[in-house]
Image (spheres, helix red, strand yellow):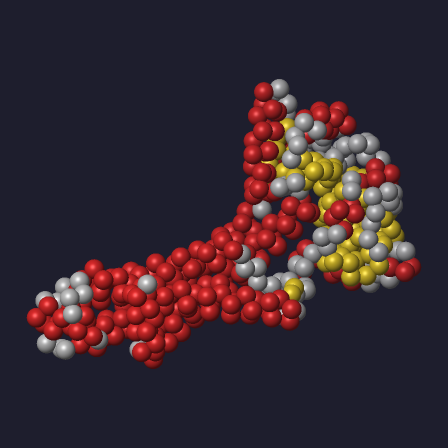
Amino acid sequence: MNIIKLAFDNLWYNKTRTILNMILIIVSFISLMMISGYNNFTKEGIIISVNTSGGSVVIADKSYWDTKSEKINMLSINDFEIIYKKLDTIGEVNDYQKKLDISGLVGNESKSKFFSGYAYEKPSKIMSTVSIKEGTPIFDDDINTFVLGKDLGEFFNLNYDDTPYLNLMTDFGEGISLGSLMAVGAISLNNSASDAITIYSPLNAIYEIFGLEYGNAHNLLVYLKDYKKATEIKNNLNQYFNENNLNYEAKDWKDLNAFLLSVIEMNTNNYLIALFILSILVFVSVMQMLTTNFLERLNEFGTMRALGINIKNVTLLLFFEIIIMAVLSSVISIIISYGAASILNASNFIMKFPGATDGYPLSLLLTFKDTVLIFAWVLSVSILAGIYPIIKVIKMPIIEVIKYV
């Protein structure tokens, strides 16, 4: 206990150097907290968005995933019944819905344009993940409606209050199909390229207008209670399909979103680079400051050795000084980090990515896990930085140290 009190006294007596060391540690700690908070927010946002809109697992005929296949086979009512029966035995499944891919030309009497989009069995679930810019969303029971990307709607200069109809030409694998749907609203996917070509429609409308065989669809979106179990569920399903000679294949959200995963990986790599640079900076700076500090205190160490205090206690004293400084710096950093994050989250600061049509409120998601890991990093780097100056002091011959008394 006396050693700990003496360590506090020494830090206070050498408060100028102590404060300089602490400032360096605090700035590094806060920087890592801010970066990790931003990465966590981005990662969670991407993952939740992907799993909410596109499902955690997607099941389709094997031809759907084969880029070399000349024809993509849809799943029929009988296919879906087989899949439903299996899904109902998996407790982690929360919900599922059919999805149909549609693409072709959309136009009116004066002009037309290429479109690409989807028809959903439960479009209301998808509408909750997009931004409605004009008009109204589509609903599960609609039989003649669709929504367009904002830029696609502007291309046709639509007034949604006039309930405009547009003609669609598409191909479901059995020849050209024509039909007209009522445009009820404009949506934004927060991407200018997507907003220029995308349409969403209720699956019922496609059955009704285009005469597609009722119940058919390209794939089944499966929503899980915990997206982290997507790979496990996917493997379970594929094993079942293979064992029963069923021509279906499941893929999870990671398989289908390689680009978004690369964004998450890039953010993680940026964090690791910052961690590496700050580790070197903190290690070298703290070691240099401690070395200078300890050498300036040789008269103090000489007095302690002259009074019979052994090397072990001197070593403990110096390590306690380092640990106390690191802990105090970390506590201050944590308070500042969480305070700054709260202020930033409440400030509604808008960020906008290149190519995005809308910004989003920047938020920092600080986690207990990251806080503990960064604290452990600070403590480890500080202790490692102190090893050399401590060894330098305790290895000095007692005669050499006492002469400074």
